[in-house]
Structures are given as structure tokens and as C-alpha cells.
Image (tube, rainbow, N blue to C red):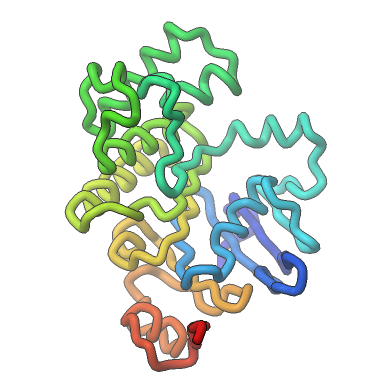
Length: 259
């Protein structure tokens, strides 16, 4: 149990439906300051919707979301803009802007959200690229000239560029081979440790979850059905978790298959 004073993100009884489809159904989740929590679960279980609700991209139907004790769902537009300065985000698929150079992608939030001048933002972008193992000349390339692994590094550099208090990782190793995926996991661990940031990640990649998490939570049917330290997941005692981590077709989780 996390003491209230140590909670960075607090989600209580969160509900979200799209038409008749219930996605989040009374979800509760706490993330402590400086903690790395990874939410696992199958495709379509609501992991991305959870992140979008916390970020304010999607408005929940009901429930409470607090960041540093402030109720996110009740913020004004200007208050939300201010709160968003606390966040960094690594998007699934990297989501780089094709029309911008690599360094401009990394510096995008610094220039657009914080009004930093381009020369200063450029220097920070090059420094952050170096932190993820990319040379300065990479900053002058376009995203289309990069491999998938390099694009993911650029996306990580962008996520940490403003040294945020909270970082969200959305399927950080999707589309990468196992070796490059492990390289990205190592970079995430290193970057988060250096920043002292609080992180919330969503993934179905168990190797990634084991590497970057302090604690793992499993989302199923719109609720967190199990949560525990990463080292305890193999002895969770939960049939749903056991089926998921071993990738078994047989078990309490029933996949919908069209016939």
C-alpha cells in the first residue's frame, strides 16, 4: 500500500465506454513518485484508453484521476496546459513528424509548448540525442532516413527532452527485433533513473515489462485484476496473469475469434 503523500498518480473507479462497449469498468491504480509501473493486458483491453484519460485526450464517463493531488478531470484548459508540462510521452510507432528534421522532432515540445528559442532548443536536442546513443549529425536527418530502432531512440530523446516529472511509454518496443527491443529497454531504464521520473507504461511485451518495471499491474475487463512487484509475477497466484505471461490459448481469458 502506497502512502497518500507518496502517490504521484491516483486513479479511482474510472469508467469509460464507447457506445455499448465498456472499456474501463471501475479501474483503480496508484503510481508512486519515482516508481515505474507497467500495465499489461491483451489487445483492446483499454490500456491506451487509460493513458489518454490521464492525459485528458479522452474524457472518462466517471471516476477520479489525480496528479500530484489535483483532480485532472476538473481542470480548466489553461490548468491542463500547465499540467501537461509535467509529462513526456513515447508514442507507439514513435509518431515522429516527417516534415521536421530529427533535432526539430526532439525539440518540438521545448519550442512549441515552452517557447524556447531555437538555438537553445537545438543544443538540448543534440544533448538528448547523445544520451540515447545518437551522434549530432543524426539531428540533421529526416525521420524517413532512420531505421525503426533509431526512430525509437529519437522518440525517447523527445520524451525526455524537457526532463519531465512523469513519462508515459506506449508499447515502447513494438515493431523492434528482440535485440533492439532490449537496447531500448536499457535506454529507458537509464534515462528514467537519471531523471528520477515517475513512469507509467503499457505493453504486452513481457520481456520489456520485466526489464523496465518496479511493479506490474494487469488490466482485464476494464479493471486492474492483479498488481505486484515485477519479481513476483511468476508466482502471482492469479490464473489470468499466469495464462497471459505464458501465452496460453487455454485459460480464463477468452479471445474473440471471428468465424
